[in-house]
Amino acid sequence: MQMDMLRQSSAQVVIVRFAPSPTGIPHIGNIRTALFNYFFAKKTGGKFILRIEDTDQARKVKGAEEAIEESLKWLGISWDEKIIQSEFLETYKKAALELVSKNLAKEEDGGAIRFIAPKIGKTSWTDKVGNKLIEFENSDIEDFIILKSDGFPTYHLANVIDDSRQNVTHVIRGEDWISSTPKHIMLYKAFGWKTPEFVHVPNILGADKSKLSKRRGAKSVLDLKKEGILPESLLNYLMLLGWSPKDDREILSKEDLIKEFSLENINVSPAIFDERKLEWMNGEYIRKSQISPSASLRAGNLKSKILELSGDKLKDIESLVFDKFLELAQTRMKTLLDFEALVTPFLGVQPLKLDSEEKEIAQKLAEKLSAIEQWNNEAILFVFKEITQEENIKMGIIYKVFTGREAGLPLPESLEILGKEKTLELLK
Ligand code: GLU
Image 1 (spheres, rainbow, N blue to C red):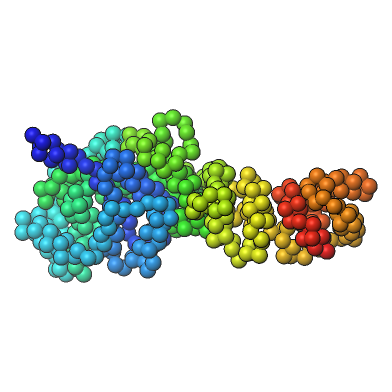
Image 2: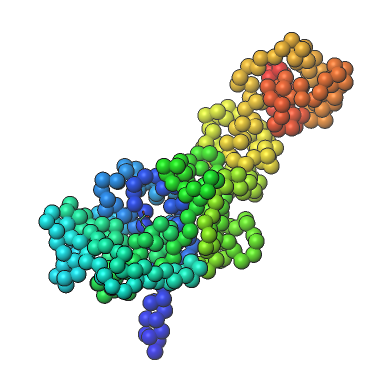
C-alpha cells in the first residue's frame, strides 16, 4: 500500500526543461520560456532541467552556451540537471536505427535516416495554454529526416528522445514549435512512448507588434543588465509577459512567483515587451533596495551594483558622499545608470562654457557661498534666493551655472552633500 502510494506520487513529480539551441545570445523571449519552466517546477516541487540542444553544429555560436547560463544565473535561476545533446550521439543513432528495423524509418543514399510519417488520420493534442485542442491532418506532414548524414540527429529526434528519457512531464515552449509537435507525437507513438503534456506559450512582441527576434534587435538579459536593470525587476517583469496572477498585483518577489505561478493563468494572446514599463518597475525595485553595506550586511546592495556598472566614472567619489548622493538620487532613478547621469554634473569633470552673464553670476555665487558659516541646504537656498532677486534671474540659471543643465538632483541638497570646498571648486 505504502509502496503504491510512493510510486504514484513519484510518477506525478513534475519534470520540465529549458532546451535552448546555442545559436546566439538568448533574448528575453527565450529566457521568459525558461522562467515559466522554472517557476512551474518550483511551484510543484518538481525538477528543472537545462538541456543544450546543439545538434545543429553549423549554427552553433561560440559563447552562446555560456551566455545562456550567465543569463539564468544572474536572474537567480538554477537548474537541477544539465545535459548537452552532442554528448549522446550514439543514443540518437541507435534509436533511429531501431525505427529503421521496425520499418518506421528508412535509410537514404547519403546515410541520413528519414522517418516515414503516417499518411492517414489526424494527430492532435490538447494544449495546456487555453486548454485548446490542436489538430493536424497527417496527410499534411511529410516524411522527415531524423538523423543527418553527419551522424547528428535532427532537432525532432533528439528532442523527443531526451524528453522521454529524462521523463519530462510538461513541454513548456514557445508557440513557434506548434508545427513541430505533430512530428514529435508521431515519433513518441513510433517508439511506443508516452507523450508529455504540451504547453505552447504565446510569443512576446516588440512595441511594433512584430515578434521579438534576434534579427530585429531583441534585447538579451545581459544587454539589460548593462543598461542598469536589476535582476529582481527583470525576473518580475518577464514573468508578467504572458502570465498574470489572479489578482492585479504587479510587483511580485521570487517567493510570490513560486506561490502564484500556474499554467492555467498563462495568457492565450501574445504579450508586448514595453521597455518603459520595465524601467518603471526597475525604479520601484531601486527604491526598495538597500543603499550600501553599511546599512545592512546584505550583499548585492545598490551601491555595489552601481559601482560594478559605472565604477570608472564614479571611483573618486568619497564613500560617505556617494551614499548621501545615492539617498537623494534613489527616488529619481529608473536604472542604475541614472545615478551616474544624475551625479556627474556635480563632479566637475567637464569644464562648462558659460556666457558673460553666467560668469558674473558664478562670481556672485562664489562670494556669497564662501561667506556661509553653517554649510547646509537652507543656507545655500537662502543665497540662491537672494541672488535671483538681486539679479532678477530664474533659479534655472543658477542650476545651469553649476551643472550645465537645467534640472536634475535638487541643487541645495546636492551642494550640501558635496561640501563647501568642492562647491566653490565647481564654480571655478
Ligand atoms: N532547441 C529548441 C529551441 O531552441 C527547443 C524547443 C523546445 O523546447 O522543444 O528553442
